[in-house]
Amino acid sequence: MFDAYARILYTLSVAPHPTSENPVAPSRDQLASVLEVLTRNTTTPNDCWYAVWEGNTALDDIRDAAPTANIAGYQYFLLRGPVARATDTLGGLSPNLWWPADHSWCMAQHFDFPSAYFGGTADTVADLVALTDIESRPVRIEQIVTASHNEHND
Image (cartoon, rainbow, N blue to C red; front, side, top):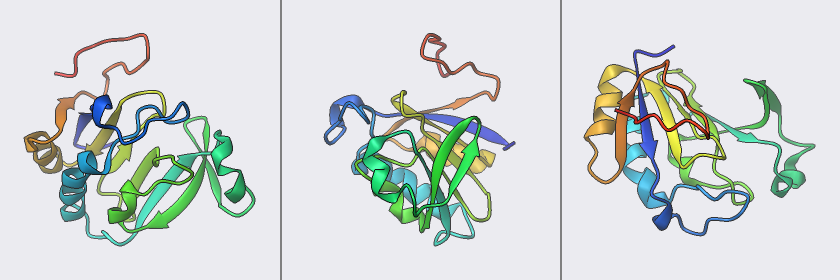
């Protein structure tokens, strides 16, 4: 558990080329300022874990080579690299989960929702919420997140 949480809402109209497999992919521009904040708020900016949901056939070419992990009932491919690579895609897909090796924060993006949820220190959440080029709000850990639930994120 983290000290604080935030929701980052992606603007669908600026997503580069949404596809049926990844209709809510954030654009590089939307993540640029987020990455600046996250890079500053970890002691391991060059060592980040990325988890990409393995249920997409676009990833068949790495299926036998990449390590996997079951996280919260979903099977993910695990990849590693610097925080700056979070905007890279794999088979056109963005990472669903990513966290630095020091576990100072974690970003979660479900493939069905146009937003990401972030856990970290209260200061890091405040830095994210202060960004003016993205929409983000603090959220509570107990807030319901489902496709059929429309609770405001304030």
